[in-house]
Length: 189
Image 1 (cartoon, rainbow, N blue to C red):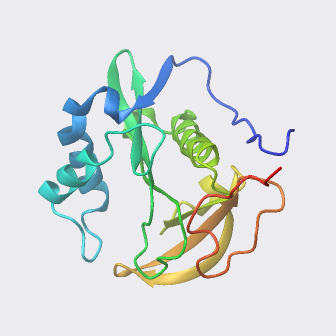
Image 2: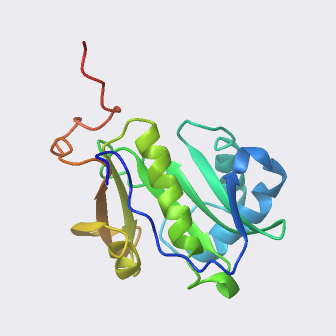
Image 3: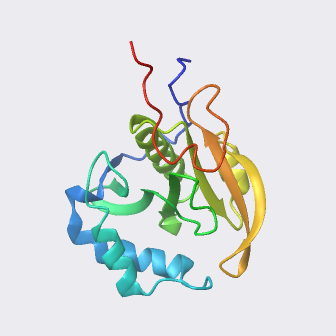
């Protein structure tokens, strides 16, 4: 495997799944905001549905942060995942984060979530970031199967969360406050 190449994820090849930027179909922002609100609205300090819609409008871009990817099956949206600058206010120096990983229940356990996670990681790598972060209350095993590692446990938003990291390049720089706030710069010639 090349130094900057991400491992492939084993997928169920029976489903015809297409991943695309949310920017290609902004009209589905209300749907995605509703999914996210139903999934995570119970957490402390959760955004309102209106706040989620407003925030997703900032994700209507490609090759930049924030951005969101949508999984499509037969021209119907079935999942999403986002790349955001920061998803945990208590770790502002850690940039970027995987967020909003959601797949409709009837499409789960078919590799769609893994494809979305891989796509977000590839976007972070394309933008020059050596490492990506996430937090989850209960999906550690899912992420571990894709190379994520537990960093630490933290009580956040009223729940116990596992903070996880994934190195996107071989031998990334150490995580030191402020060291990963910007993408890596290529060596000068």
